[in-house]
Image 1 (cartoon, rainbow, N blue to C red):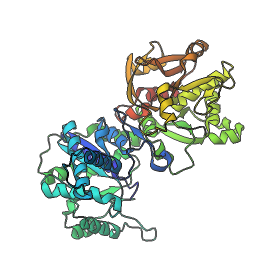
Image 2: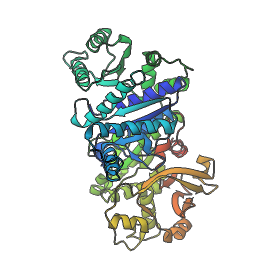
Image 3: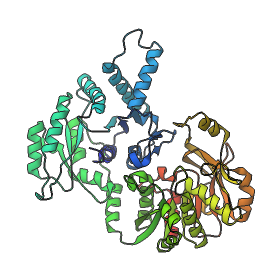
Amino acid sequence: MSSVGKGIAAASVSKILQSRGYRVANIKCDMYVNIDAGTIRPAEHGEVFVGEDGVEADQDLGNYERFTDQICTHDNYITTGQVYLEVIRRERNLEYHGEDVEVVPDIPNEIIRRIKLCQKKNKAEIVVVEFGGTVGEYQVLLFLEAARMMKMKDPENIFSIMVSYLPTPSLLGEPKSKPTQYAIRTLNSAGLNPDFILCRSDRPVSDSIKNTISNVCSLPKERIISAPDVGFIYDVPVNFEAEKLGAVFLKTFGLLSRKNDLKDWQKLSRKIKGLKKEVKIAIVGKYFNFKSCRDTYISVIEAINHSAWANNCVPKILWLDSEEYEKNPKKIKELAKVDGIVVPGGFGSRGTEGIIMAIRYARENNVPFFGLCLGMQLACVEFARNVLGKKKAHAVEMDPKTPDPIIHVNPRQAENIKHNRYGGTLRLGAYPCTLKSGTKTFAAYGTKEISERHRHRYEFNNDYRGMIDKAGLKIVGINPEADLVEIVELAKHPFFIGVQFHPEFKSRPLKPHPLFKAFIKASL
């Protein structure tokens, strides 16, 4: 079912195999007909994760990168829309040599081709492929058919892992395996037998439950793995290894362990549990009334976590809705209780005046502030209004008629908007940036040349660069290729930095992003 933890399970499996000395690649298969995740509301589907090459993907690619420290690209992401689009393109180009093109086997064959292409490009010895959705859903059948066809042709090298939820009825107090038994039968009906079962539950599953599942699906009990809820997702590989999952995998695959090195991960797990000191971080945004703040901003949350742990503290994140400040300006005083303020990315005008109020509070009251993408743009707007005196300054996205367009749209993006070209047309992926020495930003990175990932359509208007810099909001990072402003920094402030990119995408548990790390240090 949705949100049961398939992505974390896939990332953890890869981490364990990687720790045993094998080259691993991850693939996420999404069932929707969208070409990518870029046009889907984050509040509905979760964060749009941006890869190094600009792929706009499901948030699980972020989990893969954080767990394995490998870079994901278009090759690591497959959607139904991509598959059908390619099959139709090939049909139009006579690449099927006049044969009729059928849903089966041509659609599954395209899925298989993409899996093998990812394996080849990544030089991976083991590929971990995650299917989104639920066994039994119509839309997952063609992906299951691809797995069946691969298994039929190469039974010694294709294995299936089922992640299944065991509910615990409150009056009974123990997990029940009947839904999992039914799911196994449903998978059997698609021509597949699970080789491993990861039993998701709110608590560890007992031996008796493992015995029951073992009998139902004809699996050795050692391949039925308990996957209980944990406090931190980075405990999951450690828990799996406690169940000897790595050894069971390799035994089943007929492979030998080249090493067994999860020490740094286990050390981090122990450290997190022992931390007591708190740092209060406010995330001020406008996507808080929907499904899940956590899914919408998962990479921001994890970047804060990584940096807090590196600074020997635990973050207490407060979700503050900027629209509340617009309704009741006095409520802004609640920011006096926090140690630092983050304004993450976003689109559209809703809630932006409240965000500008929060940024002004941070600037005037010396509260550490970190603006990401939209957060950087609105920091420039706030400064223009309240320091430069340009009271009607704004971003053209929010006010197309503003007399002072501090943030504007470049000509290429204007053409995209004019012709309704939205999917895949943002400024996407990694771009270089040159830093100004002697700044907090330079001190955090420790190098003059950096590369960060972007996802935005609007840019800082260079017509205002000189006056803003002269007034104290320094331009400290520039894209050398197009002379675009990437980073602004308030010199006389404990920490006031806005970045046009998304540094959260590059943060790792064992390698926190330098700007997030510096921000948490300043907040402490």
